[in-house]
Image (tube, rainbow, N blue to C red; front, top):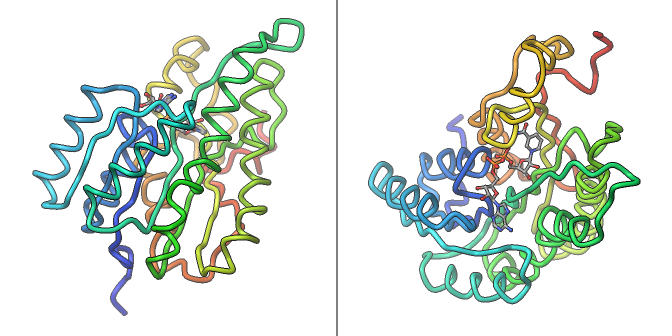
Length: 256
Ligand SMILES: NC(=O)c1ccc[n+]([C@@H]2O[C@H](COP(=O)([O-])OP(=O)(O)OC[C@H]3O[C@@H](n4cnc5c(N)ncnc54)[C@H](O)[C@@H]3O)[C@@H](O)[C@H]2O)c1
């Protein structure tokens, strides 16, 4: 049977689309013919990637400068995406930040910014795109969570709260969106080689992360892009409210 990874073929809005995992999602989706709108604060990177995807794959690809911490900016960006894409039937929230601030050093403004970008923007993005998701059969949403939504890490309580919150808010939204046939799932990456992760790799002795991972290596962004593309496709038509862990065997590991 022909794989339906490119179906339903509707456009997809991807936050954090200029770099790392968001970028890999955009590439995976454009490669199977899905139009994409990339929302990111990195103006040059988001615009040049959109131009490259349009040239490489012949799809409509739009780069938009959007700070997803700003609710008004999300609303305005949804309107622009609606005008520029042929249709919108997918949303990926990959924009994210991490801030090392253990309890005792927590700064309220920083806590709020991490939660607003990583978690609140998923809900506000869905809200802004709801008319489009409802209008197009087969619509689906993916939130990029993290294995840190499950694991305890003393250094990054705001990050772990945002990702654990994402796992549960996905189940809440799935209850609502399911009434319209819209699916929503989370993907929890392990350690993936992106600019965000590179800082942690550089700060630790070589092999620190790999030792624990059952496959013995870090992940590539494209390996998350494939999982997200699957969840947005009609191949995943009965998958909703779930967490897909893509970590090479990390949270299941007992290796020291
Ligand atoms: N790399 C990993 O190992 C890993 C593991 C688990 C989860 N994640 C999650 O994957 C997602 C992507 O991370 P990445 O590793 O690709 O990092 P990255 O830094 O390469 O990409 C993050 C992107 O988000 C954008 N962004 C940040 N704040 C924004 C804002 N306010 N508005 C719009 N865009 C904004 C950045 O400009 C950047 O392009 C994040 O949610 C992260 O928490 C990453």
